[in-house]
Image (cartoon, rainbow, N blue to C red; front, side, top):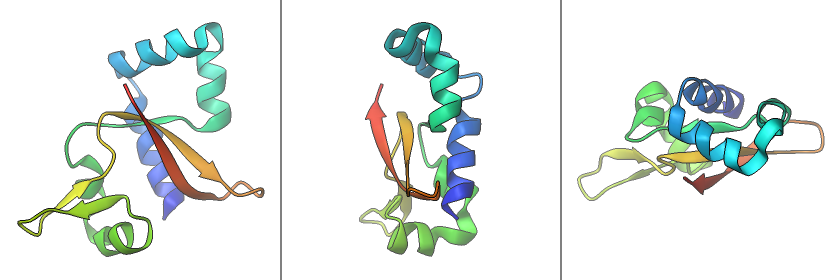
Length: 102
């Protein structure tokens, strides 16, 4: 499941001007290499992850803590408008994420 979330965040970064400007300031000419090597992505505004994986909300909520539930019992994304860095095991399997505000 987390492999799919990594892909979602990586795809969400494509064509996004503000996150790319932020990353270019951080890494300069190395930006695209770092994005590829570390599978850097972007968590867009809103409930995009929740909507994309609506059939997996229980797993994303209970197991991975990537979505939460508000007072109206509606799910929402924990990470929104953040640069996303997947955390991997020594064997390369994603086990979580770190998000950095832009």
